[in-house]
Length: 336
Image (tube, rainbow, N blue to C red; front, side, top):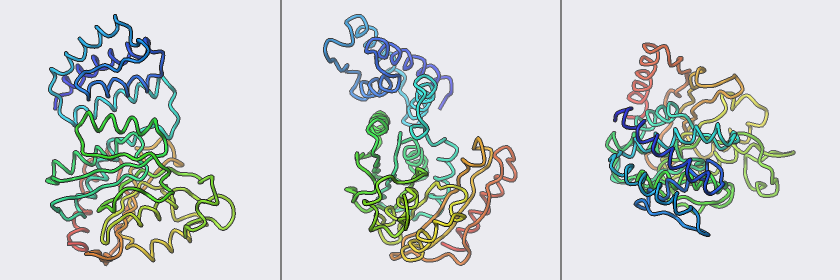
């Protein structure tokens, strides 16, 4: 992968997006989605009500031909989409829940997953709150490079714009993925999976009557959506499957966590919780941790020593490398 090639491709991709946005009078995000979809279809243009105009069509066809000549890898294309979404964030003033999970976090998620998973002939992975799909595709590419071959990905989200981004991005990268537009609190239509990985939304779920059967629902008032989604994810795992969730750093420090603790005790092994580097976040309130659970059954077993710790700051390279070695040692001593 060369940064120069990515930069050159991105500049032409950006030109195509700019042309569509102005000619169609749509948001920058919508123009990104349509540009990606057009490229995934081999450069075929979507024409509706005479738009884009003939002049712009000719310009786009020429740009698409130039983009096809770059021979981009899927990982390079993922980074281009990421750069485009960063610009969309600045241009459209995208709301917080439409923003991506950073690559660094995706790499740490994959690092831990790759250590605890047993390589199988096939592996099904679900993101229960998939958003733009950046976390899921980051994990996919890293696992594929580490020897996982027959992976099938699934993503669920109730935001159709986010799903359009995730679907476009996966098609462009030729990732074997299916996406479902539904509220993840409802009965999921995805199959049972080996892994659930998700950057969980944080806050309250607004429809109290829909969650009365959840053990994590609040006795009074609204329930925490991230608690509900952990419970839902555990139901979707095969016996012995892993759930790896991005959760608030102080997840177990609130009075509402009793229901979540009961669900974890009844359905899963609490294998670990690692606080992510503080320098990844703008403030204390936004800091997150990685919660590692393994569903009861199958080859699952409780680790003799739970993996607990704090990632050092990214800038402290020696300490960070040493922490990763500690994770490797923990896996060897407790799971292998």
